Every structure is written in structure tokens, then in C-alpha cells.
Length: 158
View 1: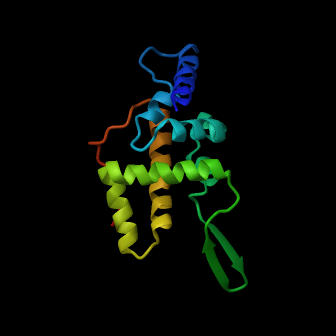
View 2 (view 1 turned 30 degrees about the horizontal axis):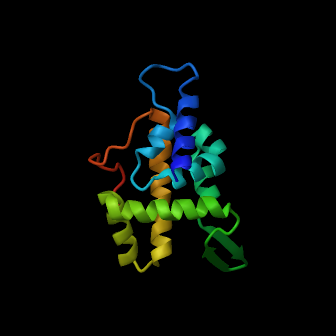
View 3 (view 1 turned 180 degrees about the horizontal axis):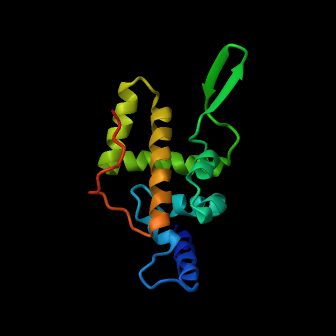
């Protein structure tokens, strides 16, 4: 665990070598500020989803992590199922990221509770929280801001 933390810090130091504005932060620091992101989740995000993170592509990162459902249509039937074609390590990391965020973040807990009230399973509700967290992470990466737990989300769940 300590070695993984040292490697994540080394990646953060490498990112700061590139010329940038003095007030900008590197990707590992921004991702580490999110609730639920520890060294293992951070390492999985940076290794498995590096291209999507570099492009700040939330849709690609959601698909890679398996939080986006797949719709299968055949004639008049339509079925929505969990995405199976994604890296297992990244899917597990986002699952645990969402699980810990629900325990420590007010907005994540509210989203989880709303999904459970609608009748969704525990895993489906966590995938929804993970999808929201990925969107927040990509928005933060675009602006270069750290996570602010007191900031009100722009889109409220009904």
C-alpha cells in the first residue's frame, strides 16, 4: 500500500514537470480530492482509464468502467442489462469508489437513497453514483479545481 502511494505521488510529480500555468493542478491531485478515491482506486483510474482521463471524456470513462447500461433490442423487445465488456479492475475500482463515497459524501448518499427508493438494486444504485462521480471528476479535470463537498450539484435528482 505504501509503495502504491509512493508511485501515485511519483506520477503526480511527473505531471508537474510539464509546462503549465502555476495555479493548475495535476490529474492525480484532482482525482485524489474526490470522496472515496484512495491509492488503489486512483491507480486503477490512472492505469486502466488513462486515455479517457487525458481527453476528459466522461462518456468513454463511463463505458470503460461498466457503469453505462447496454440496451439490447430484438424486434419489439428491449432489454437493459449491465455492461460486461469492460476491464474488471476498473469496474471494481469504480464500484468501491462509489461505495465509499456513499458513506462519506452527502450528495452521493442522496443519489444512492433515491435510486434505492425507486426499487433499484444495491449494485445498480452504486453504478449510478459511480456514473455521477465520473462526470464530476471529468468536469473537475477540465477546470482544474479540487473537489468541494459544500458545492451544490447543478442537476438534482427528483
